[in-house]
Length: 476
Figure (cartoon, helix red, strand yellow):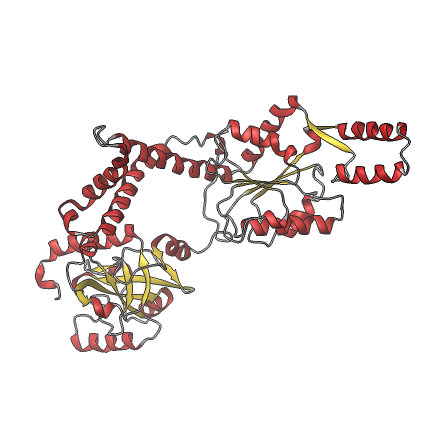
C-alpha cells in the first residue's frame, strides 16, 4: 500500500480504542505511523496539525442520533485538528452509521477551508460482530451471591453496581471479525485509488521523505570509520560546508558554515529526489487529462508569484526586491522614440510620474559574498514592477514597444506575477547595475524576495551580458 502517507500524516478519531485496532494493525504492517485522538475536547491538539492526508473519523460518540448534533461535532473535531492550512486530505468515515449522515456532513463541509477532497465510508458493521458482554454474566453472578446471602435492597445495590461497571451503558460488545481484515485492507486501498490525484500527491510526499533518508544515509556512510562516533555528525556538517564554501570556509562565522552545510545538503537531496521521482509508478493514474481550466485554475500570474517570490526575507538577502524612491531604472530602447534624447526625456518623465508603476532594485550580491560580510555595500540592479495593463496602455498609445522587442540589456525573462492583487511585469536594466551601502538598506522597504532559482537566473543573465557588452556599458 505504497499510496498511504508514510510520514505520520494519518489521524484516527474514535472514542473506542478497541474498534480502531484493526486499522492500526493494517497501517502498522505497512509501516504507516498514526496520530490517535479519542474525540474528547480536552484531548484534542492545542494547535492544529498540517499536512494530514488521511483522516479516519467516527461519527457517533454518544447515543444521540440527532443529525445536526452529529454533523456539528464532526465539523468541530475536523476544524480543531486540521485548522485552515492543512491542505488536501481524504476523509474516511469509520463508523457504525454506514453512509448515514454522509450527505449532511459533506454539505456542512462544502464551504469550509478544511473540507476534504474525497469522502469514503467504511461501516464498522461490515467488520465487527455483536456479542453479549461478559460483564453481564459477572453481574448475574454477583446478584445470585447477594440473593443467597439474604442481603436486603438487592435491586438498589445491583443498579449501583451496574452503573459503576458499565460506564458507557452499552449492553453489547463489538468484536472484530478476523476474516474481514483482507476486506478492510482492500476497501481502504480502493478508496485511495478513487481519491485520484490526492493519492498521487501522497506518493510524491512519500518519495520526498524517502529521498531525504537516503541523502543522510549516503553522506553518513562517507565519513571515515576512524572518526569517533560522537564526532561523526560534526564531521558530516564540516564536509558539506567545506564543499560549498571552498576557500571562504575559514573566514566565515559558525552559523554561516552551518547554513552552507544545509544548502549543500539541499543540493544533494535534489539529485536523489530526481532519481526517485522517476521510479514513481503512475500507471494507476492514467489516462489523465492534464489541461488548463480557466474557470477552476487561478490566474497564471498568481501561480507565478507563488513559485517565484517569498514574502519572508532578511534585509541583506540576495534576491531581495527593494523600493527605489529615486526611480533609477530607465526604459532604454523600450521607448519608441529612444533615439531622440529630448523626446525620450519627456516619455521618461511621464513614466516616472505614473504612480501605478513601482520602481525597484534587486539585491544581486553573491551568496558567499553575503555570508562573509566582506564589503560595506550591496550590489543592486535597478528595475520596475509595471502593471501588465499599464504596459499595454503605453504600447497601444505608441509610447512603448512590445515587451518582447526589448534589447538584450533589459531583463524581461520572468513571467508576469501577481502582487497585492495586481499583475505586474518584472523588468531589470542589466547595464544599469550599481550599489547601495548596507546602512542605507536597513531603512529601505523590501517588497519581497526572489526564490533562489530566479535570483540565480538573473545573476547568470547579468554575467553573460557583462561578458558580451563589455565594461563600458555598466555603471559604478
